[in-house]
Image (cartoon, rainbow, N blue to C red; front, side):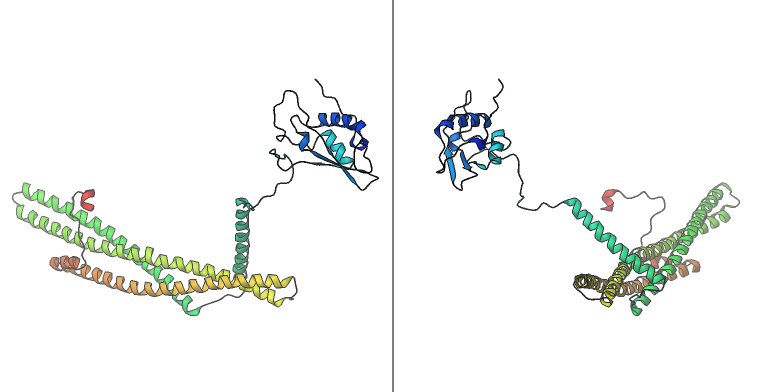
Length: 374
């Protein structure tokens, strides 16, 4: 069944000068309001305030409850819809609809106010990218200006000299390391050949009765040389391992700190240059906040630069002490082992390995089990 459209507007409600409605139009108004409100609304809880155009006084009409057919909803469970036709006409003619605050229904439209500001992860990442891009731009500009000879750079003469010496020494130690590895490879091939030659002599000494002693002497000599070569090979490999640790771990760790120090120095000079340029410009209401912000950033990077310079100085000092101690022991080992081997002093060669606690692996021995390694 189609609903009957209300024909009377709110402007047609007659209001007397004392704010009371005429009785003759009360029934028609209730009928129009019936089809304008949702089913189940208690009219006893709805106040309609009517303002006349010619009178400053207000009239309040208390409408009685209107029972809805087939509806058992509570009078307090409905709210006047703002999109209702009658409500729109009432509002257009100066009538206000007052909805009770005790209603349990919620308004479906209107502004929503959040108590706490929600942080957007995308905006935070965008801000980090913006700061990184700005810092990269400043550092790149500083590096280019230094290479072109236009920009100034902060130089610690004593520290820079120590860093240059360290890099030069690293190259020389790497060269020694490569030569020692080549010597180890060649000595291993020679020892392997001597062992095979000794086995061949021993076999011929058993099969050639007329040359038994001659083949036997040569077999013993080659096996002794192979044994001493294995002892020397153990000493050289121990020397290579120690120097490799010094060059590729200890020195490399110090050079990594040096790289961080150089990056901090570039950032420090970049923000120092920005601050100097701002200080040379005019000082007004627009530039003063920029100068203050630049001063804060400059101070942050200055503290970082000072910290990294102190770290590099400490690491260089400890590295020098460790390098002298390690190389002293390894050079003594290398010298004594080489001298004893070529002098044919097997006892002195074995004593050298015992002095440096070097254990040789028995040729052909199986690898230790995981339980033995533990």
